[in-house]
Length: 266
Length: 296
Image (tube, chains in turn red, green):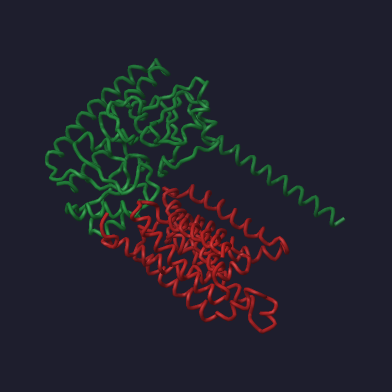
């Protein structure tokens, strides 16, 4: 077994995981507060379709994933308004469509299943240099934008109408937030897998909401939790010979349950 | 009035669409018209197709369920496949878990007069870890051809001599292939191959080689980090210069190992479905070239 950092792929894995653990909560907190946690799932399932599409027409699958999940979140925003109080229908419809597209498109590509699998369950051991650079760029974009628009996003997540009255361009910022969600989901799919991406968006945020009182503290705690879950998850999966994506998610889930339990006791 | 017209137009549109769909679907059925003068043979995937053609020649019409370019482990038969299968004379599959989807098919063929051949049942050299890719040992491949020939003779006794003659040709080709592999193996200076897919137990077993696989028998899931580390350490410790990928697999993991260790990637084809019309012998000789280059 030996030194966990003896090989370059493991260093790339840690780097990518650490980056995603910063960017995912930046998006995760606003979408959880907007009662929109399921959007990550919808986007990631559509991203799978994008991966199949990318392989089919011969572009980098990650680019396909980004395009499709952007289409998915925009589709959700569009459909949501049509259903009024039942707006969560939009998320489910888009998610089902994404799964359907994936199933149909993957039938057309050579060995679709293997490629789709690696995005479904994450493929952290096989991150190429290009993908790592893309992860750096996209994570940086997410962190910079959410930091610059910190106040606007904060206002908007609690009360859209009040935010609009204060002169915040609610529509534009919502759009931007959806865009960033799509990008984060596509990139993170490569690491923890599309089936588990929600966990990285939601579990650290949910855990942080149990311990922190303010928006800012919740954000900081959720980043700390996300880092802990992913890095511990990688260490554990390495030494116990487990699949990394699932290990990261399970550690997060256990931490969430333990935190909830401790909180009730105190 | 206008409103009524609109409604009527809508209804007609629905009807026309339905009619178009139905005719398109039935049209598909008609397009794959069968040549009923030949023995109707259904096979699960490419290796079985190649063996069936090797034996059956122009006396059989072979239909392959798993399309060219699709990994047989991951395939699911369509409704059309199942419908055609129930009219087949012979159905050939490998078995040993190669086609996990076979159970849904065995339900269809059970109770019909379709002669079913589970080709892996016939082979002499089976792997202890249930590697289903038994045909990569030439002797096993011959045994599978033999089982197929028997089924053809039973289903179409008129042409028994024809099948027997073609089987004898295969015997000669298999002997030459085995000889050429053994000759080449004498010149190998190493005996461990690093592969992406754990599919080469029988090949290695036949010619005194060892395989160290990055992925498992089912090639579609990534290795754990610990296993990947182990493989890379092994490559570095033994000065290995080449690793093997295969035509139908995603190359991301192999590429990562190659870039970490500075290895070159060669193709070793498990003969699952990369067709391009190549037969078993062509692919096995290409594999021999790759092995000779890596192990010299």
